[in-house]
Image 1 (cartoon, one colour):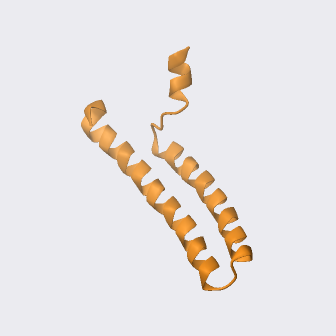
Image 2 (spheres, helix red, strand yellow):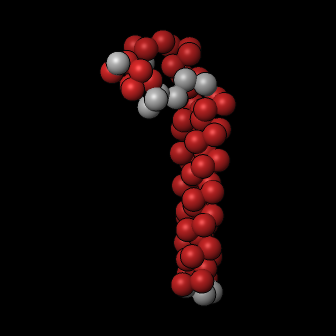
Amino acid sequence: MWKKIKRLFIIKTKFEAFLITYALATGAVARGQAYLAQYPGWGGKLLFLATTGAVFMAGAKMIEAIELHRDFGSDY
């Protein structure tokens, strides 16, 4: 039973990583829009870029980790 629950939290394919990245991006854009409304001007735009930039970095690390796991196995 615990193995089935554990499997829910393991990303094994690039498709799963892209789905998670999409979900993160949707939340980041919503948060960025709130920043634009709350902080008009350059401050809101910089916070919007920071939230979306973090998603790009997280997505790239997930995809890289999947490729490294495939190449080096579970030892890496």
